[in-house]
Length: 178
Image (tube, rainbow, N blue to C red; front, side, top):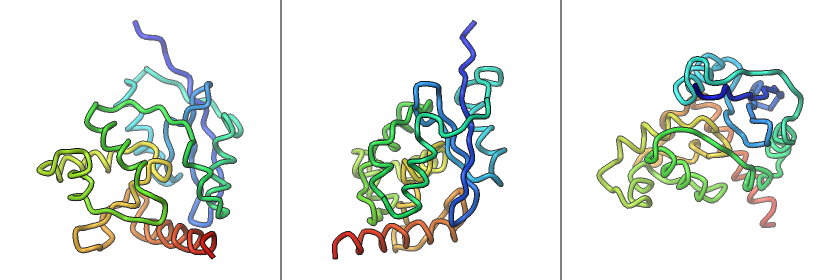
């Protein structure tokens, strides 16, 4: 029988709602979501680790990750660039998530362009599904993926949050360039 994984859960306020941060004891981010989507987050954790494959224990600032998320929301966008994450998921999902981390802050790409970046131009729908299954949004910036025409499409936290995140990154990027 596999060992039950222990994860530490913390919450922090952000300008766009309360954020849940889940990490393992080694300081790897395992999940990030908004408190009103805690059920979805737990469902993803069960999918990846099994019904009894993990336990959540309340803690403060696991591995310094909550503080790094606060820094991002305060305008220090590079605070999350090297933030360590460890996710389950299929090999394809992890490939998509790795490609998401390569999208520069303040930029956007289409689902089609993301599929091309991973060398699977016909896998646009699968890329979209993997994007939607991302357990560590913001850090693995699924909000930077837009429709082919540049429109804001699906984001687990809601389109208004996606709009805010993109504007936040654009504003902070412009400030640092000035």
